[in-house]
Length: 259
Image (cartoon, rainbow, N blue to C red; front, top):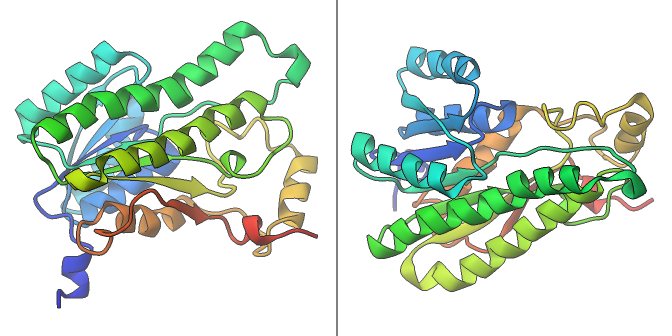
């Protein structure tokens, strides 16, 4: 039997983390680096990436930044090409770019709808196409981890387009898991409960925070580091090798609460 360290090791693997310049996916990237992976932070803000890479390098990890628009297929293809040229391969893909809005339903403009759907849903769809084609053609035993949302499982007020976009991500992940399981490509959805992050800070008004706490048995928000263990399990070929099509919920008990 493998040791616990071997089960969760990401040695000799490259993990592309789209949205890795953000708080939650940045923590996941840092966790992957500590498990031995070379991490590629993907986003638009080089300064945010630099701070995260400093922490990764200071801890002895490996990683670099690639600027890309996650909603453009040409950018994603260029991203893959750069990763293959620089790292020689890729085994882990995390799709974590996301935006949110609290616009009342009847006031949501087509422009806002398109912007959220393009980043949250189309971006995941395109990344799974671009990287999935590489995984399939090169016969890579890969792990794709798509960031879902509690709103993809249960209706939440005030985040209509965001909820739609994440519901589609949940569905796509299960369909791809079914399609690619025979090829050794695992696809799972990591489902955070309530974690204060850049895309939801404007939504977290005092009254909404009170309602969330009243529905969360642990009576607190999650911290970025509390997503790392679940993300590592889903990525690891040892510990997570038989997990696919799963919605991994990390929510402090929120989804188990009724009244």
